[in-house]
Image 1 (tube, one colour):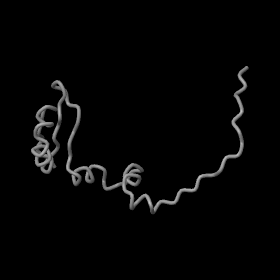
Image 2: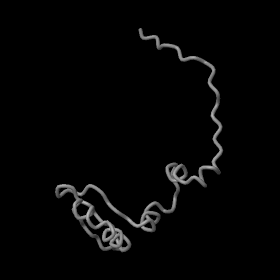
Image 3: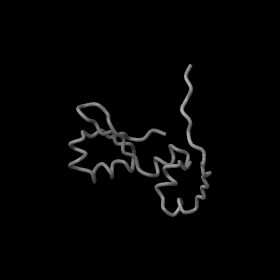
Image 4: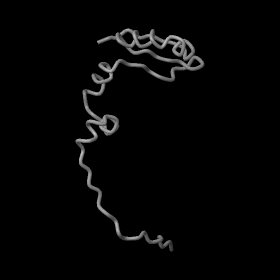
Length: 87
């Protein structure tokens, strides 16, 4: 599958964010800084396809509804760290 690619300078991106968002619906938008690629804008659907729909820890933590479903019990540490002995 070959997606159309659009390239925008960071200045053009800053002035035409809406244009970049529309272009990202059909393919990646490369944003350049001083002529060198620095960022890529993708639609959420394209991003999910690239990641095969897998959820990362950042995805879970970024979603307040999903984060409330996660149970995490951390053990209580009562011991105090001891200095390392270097010989």
